[in-house]
Length: 250
Image 1 (tube, rainbow, N blue to C red):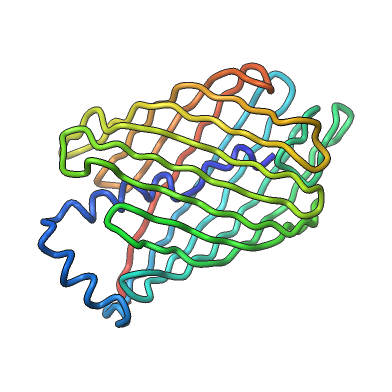
Image 2: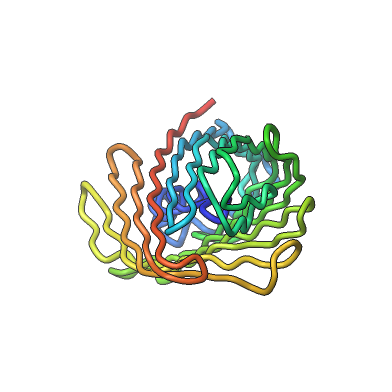
């Protein structure tokens, strides 16, 4: 159930924020080199793990994302994710559509695409890929993140993801609105809310859930930990996500 997919870009969004709060005077220089290759090139590696559970369904997700800079406008992205579906009666956002009688399923998802950064603090990732293992479904995905009021005490991040699975016709998305409540030299604490919406294809109607969330980003380790819980079509649910980013220069 990849409704649980808390995109790696969520944790990376904080790293993006920290990298763009330099003086605005640098904008003109950056924009004048949009069509020149970045040298030295930057490579980012994000490791992530996510756990989800509701009254009748559970799943885990883990994997890594690679990002290669190209120029000031876009970079290349590759992502590999492994999923384990433990039990389910809803089957939303999954090509498996599991039932209450379904056994544990395991499958992987391999994706590739572009990371577009048209403005400071704004990122749009466009991906395409396919499942392997117990599921075989082509999928397209878009991840969007934007920071508002970056030069204030409490900037706000708005992010959402959208995915479509061609095997069962299900379309789904997640959304989050968070504010930077506390920022110190050691950590950043974020408060906000979010959730998911899914429907179409093999599902009847549109389903959704949502609730509050809290996150902490440890600056020294580039480690992001987020917890969300709430209520909706899947009744009471909870999500825990952990991601860590590494950056290298070629």
